[in-house]
Amino acid sequence: MSISLHFNTENIDWQKIAEIFEKAPLGTREPEKLARAAKNSALVCFAKDGDKFVGFARAISDLEYQAAIYDLCILPDYQSKGVGKMIMNALKEKLGPLSIILYAVPGKEGFYKKLGFVPMLTAMGIFQDEAGMIERGYLEG
Ligand SMILES: CC(C)(COP(=O)(O)OP(=O)(O)OC[C@H]1O[C@@H](n2cnc3c(N)ncnc32)[C@H](O)[C@@H]1OP(=O)(O)O)[C@@H](O)C(=O)NCCC(=O)NCCS
Image (cartoon, rainbow, N blue to C red; front, side, top):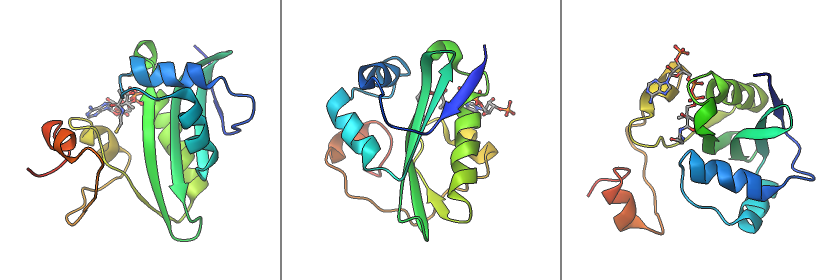
């Protein structure tokens, strides 16, 4: 396994990235919509093993003060091998001194704590699927 990181969104087969979401699992993404979301993001990171896409994450940001990281997912065969940490450290380094927020999949908080993230006491949000988010353990009921 030789993992390399890439940050360019040109000439990407978004179907392959959508498959990482599906298999990780981190939900279902339409490739075209995912491509638009990535192109509208400040920073996108792909992890590849040779020519194979194995991991993904992106950050939205004003590139002056604030950033938020979304959609970190790694193919199951590549999980627990340091690839998630590699992507997160690269995003943190590129975002430099900006404040970075994210919300963890329930149960994954420890992964982010190891990377220096601290639980937020006053985080608030409006979500399209509020009931689903409550059911999946993201929001107070
Ligand atoms: C969660 C996920 C991104 C982690 O990536 P990964 O490549 O498997 O994790 P890494 O191997 O880089 O782990 C880095 C460190 O975090 C630790 N870690 C990983 N998952 C953890 C968890 N759920 N709780 C606590 N620690 C965890 C590892 O033990 C490792 O510790 P170390 O540095 O002391 O050795 C990956 O497993 C994944 O894609 N899961 C499915 C999708 C998902 O839940 N994404 C998260 C969205 S918030």
